[in-house]
Image 1 (tube, rainbow, N blue to C red):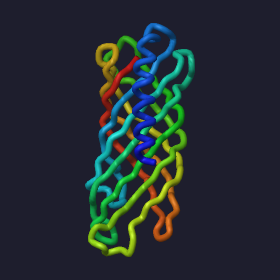
Image 2: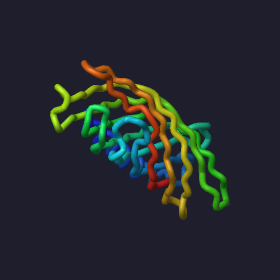
Image 3: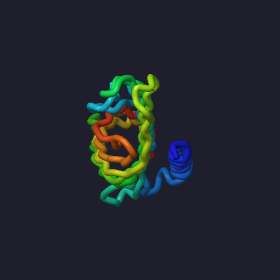
Length: 189
């Protein structure tokens, strides 16, 4: 499932960039951004970092853009049962409202939200637990951030996402809940 998420979002991002080059002067607009960051919550995620893509697109006359995002994080930390390797993946769908301030040096701001599908996994390498946890599920997300468009196409900014998804498994119940903060680098058309 993780590889399918990554391939889907990567192909989608490249497709929108290539297709929208021919419509650059039309009434379509959007952004394709890479994000690099980490989850910030109370789970065993202190040593975990991640990456992702955020794509939004729509007609300039629409009040909101359609938003699609992928985020994958992985790493090690100390959980309440000892050392733990954690990974999670989210594929997010929703809408995003972007406020551009034309002809200024001020950043653009956005607010978005929607639903996500994802999976989470905890592995205890020191065998302190009988089994590892893995689960899939869905939940909701809200994000906000600011970015500067340098020149006419290069985006640089900060992306914050709050998501909640509780996935059922046989022992504890996993979640990818919490705040994720990321640096945003990308392309605007």
